[in-house]
Image 1 (cartoon, rainbow, N blue to C red):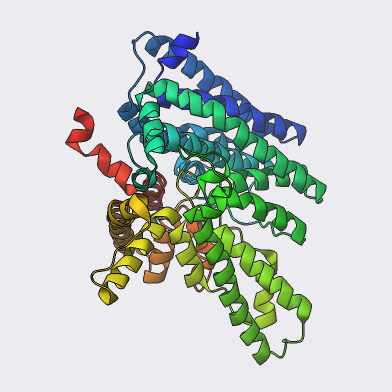
Image 2 (image 1 turned 180 degrees about the vertical axis):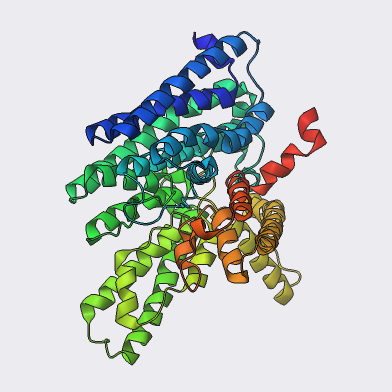
Length: 502
């Protein structure tokens, strides 16, 4: 049986796991006496498990396991095709006659974007919110594992920059791990990372329960925090600061891969403090809230609210929490940050949040965006070039690792950044042709490409509803979510002839 499962296509294994996961919301709906919803998930789970068994019998005797190229194509196929299966119980439970809405909802969750067509309170039963969070959580785990097992050996997903910053021992370890068979490598990382991912989610869930958060809401928040999907129950707003403080701690796992594993780099004392992604994130989490707090403070002077110390502290905390949330492309907005609007009389600075989402989190994490390591490589290259303008004959220093990061690392980071900008411009043009205005097209394009769906609520002058967009716009956004999750370099690799010859 084990050898048969090892030979199954990657996409089929994901299909089986998705079918098995449908029984959890079936039990949840039954406990809440949403019997139609329970039947929808239970019957769908049985049907798709039977289909998985038939396909496993048919394909399990085909021979050797797939290559890394096959796993990459399977990953892309999973992001497009798997949501069709995941959407079936969602559609049946909701009674929506158009499956395209459920497909958009599931592709948004699986890519950890978190965009939704049903944002209002009471539009969805609690079980469907739980299913959305579960799909997002499974998508986050999928990319935690795939980043190291599939993208790293191909020097994709940010590892094209990481490879230039490794020591000789690290490069040797990387070559050794690439030599392992693709299927074995995928299983190895799944076994190592899944307990960490699930354990952190469970700890956060228990912590939220201790703060008074209900069981279902706490589970949804815990899963959406670890997956950086930003999925919340309809109309939910935090009532106290304690849940936000807990979530803030666990959002740090979206900043750097070194927070949950060493990833080919020899661990030394204080390695987290030396990590460029963590240092860059710390600078942003300090400077951006300071700017936002000063902005609200100046606004409060005009509204004669400068003597309200409690409101000032809430505004500072709200800005700090919201900054880290959008930097990791989660998209939670602090309730304290919303209160700061009334204190200062100023709206949310959407352009700042758009910039944070574009920067994104760490390489090999569940966060989207350009990624902090690429930004750091471009910064080091720019600082060196500015120094050469003043001292043309100076020596850069920092050793061979620093020189590789400033040259090869910055070069591939610049290529990715330009591809990212081109895709963003093309998406905006396509959405404009689909009937959207410039501001709506810009906000939704950034939200989809950076996998920060909640950005639509705060990025523009007024909240933008995905449900108000036409069919063409939704299809464009859905495929851009996949492109943003896979990253443009991985998609370009699929069209490279040398990639298929290797």
